[in-house]
Image (cartoon, rainbow, N blue to C red; front, side, top):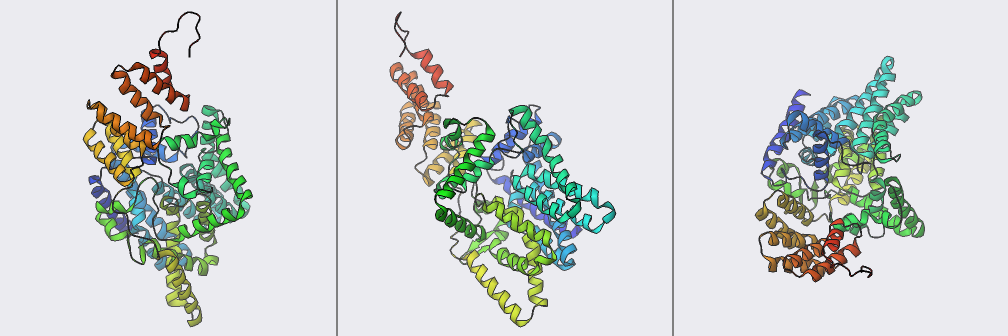
Length: 546
């Protein structure tokens, strides 16, 4: 176990140190930036910025504790997560050994140690590393409860507590709490109590600060809708820009008040669509199931494979070639073979994989959401290989090989090449962050890179226009803002920035008209409202203002 831990930790530290050359290392974007901003607010004593948690807050609090102890740098959290990843390899080996023997356990543990995607997430400011460690710890404690009847009650309660903490980090971890409660039998109440005790502080905080009874977070409904609607590809790919903000605010425009009600609004939309077009709903579920089984690592926010350009570890352990997407394209067939043939010997692990997969399929498919299933799939894969080599007769072995071949083809054919450069959304978000840090040349480079990948990106044009305006190049700035408006005539950022240019040029009437247009599109725009009030000419006595 010590050797396993050391190997896993060494690989992760090499990866983390290599990734310091990436501009994303010191500039977390989108979801990582949201976690980071919340963690820094907590560490500074201001508390979490959400009145009702938008996403499960556990990872933000975890980050904040690291910032408090180790300081505000971005290396510390990644080193801590490298330690968590190495611990997860050991926990996987221990759990696998308890169910299937020492060789299977060590095989699965080294699978985790060498698994490229897990190494990747251990180096990102995202939740999978902490989620996986907590889930495995919950299962390990449950295994101890099974083997130690005298301490079973306390151990079952502790396993429930760990599963509850995991769900405060990633809400679908509640599935593990349910599986463990079922496994506990007459002691199920202890597991449930542990889960409730872990979640209760979050629920009470939502009630106290936001006045609503939201158990963990309110993004569940919108994530459910993103993954279950007639335009799945469009909503999954929605950019982190004004369109996303408009999307999130749709319930409010429909007269729905409150975070919990907004979440229910989106969930009800899913129900209405499924009821009105069950065939289309069923086809989408089949499509998501195929995406789930495929070896390609689907990104969320930013592409995964370009990180290979900085990390020698990922170059060896995370890749695609024609006919093979490594490693999930190998793990999936072996893991499902083991699940089919060894389910009865490890029902807790089996049900966790099955219900965990269902929880992913219920939303939308990304590598990040699939990652927590990998350690358990590795245990079943190791057992599947052992049975295939040693314990099967000729007929059973032939059936197993046929199943493996079929699953291998499903997982690896038609996966396409690896992305070699970062996606437009990531480049845009990095550009914005660099601009906010006062690094305009680097910001411009990444914004132009975003436009090279997707010329229809009005927010990138707006930010380039702002950079040009700050340099005093009003003509170039106006041209870029007009490009943004040509692509999105209701882009309020383009309108208000163009109005600012008009105002500085002394063309007040034109500026006021642009501010009014922005205000008509977004009545909550306080900046545009203030400008209209301050710039419009005073009205003659007795005349109503326009």
